[in-house]
Image 1 (cartoon, helix red, strand yellow):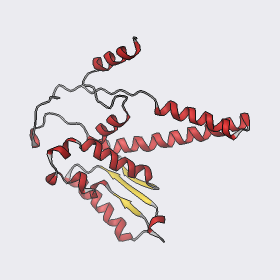
Image 2 (tube, one colour; image 1 turned 30 degrees about the vertical axis):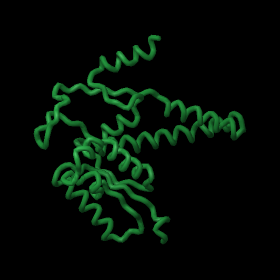
Image 3 (spheres, rainbow, N blue to C red; image 1 turned 180 degrees about the vertical axis):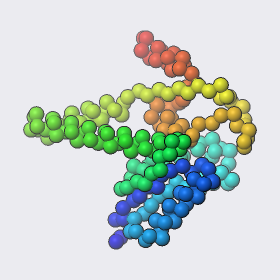
Image 4 (cartoon, one colour; image 1 turned 45 degrees about the vertical axis):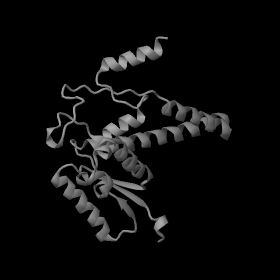
Length: 199
């Protein structure tokens, strides 16, 4: 089978701790050993993101966007996924949320298309209704807030960090929020909404 035709797989699961990291490595190696004619991506193999020892401060400060771009693109393009959605694996839970959301959206749009097609028997009109739904979803204004008293703007190093958020979760927030930011307090979001809607 030609490499371009090979199905693409995505291995998802926690990679933060030593044991979890070994488990993902084990799963990836098992796929290779099985010689299944597929190409498999495992985030644990992506050293450009996960090799913190060779990362500059600048690269580390853009890590959320890099993780989101790399993992979500591969998740989207995969033909199959193998996930271990452990309750404490926030990044994997985000990926699972993406899978659910994409599945829900696809089913809803397919249903809408065939429902409209039965009503009108006009392919263009049915597609127009589907496009309206797609635009409604993609143009939704999303805002996120996350208060934690430990959040600060001081430079912190190594294990001295007061607080951090999972970078895949943060990257998703940056990607799908209306103004590409995470607010520290609900009141900040409220002020922004008042500014927009109280004109």
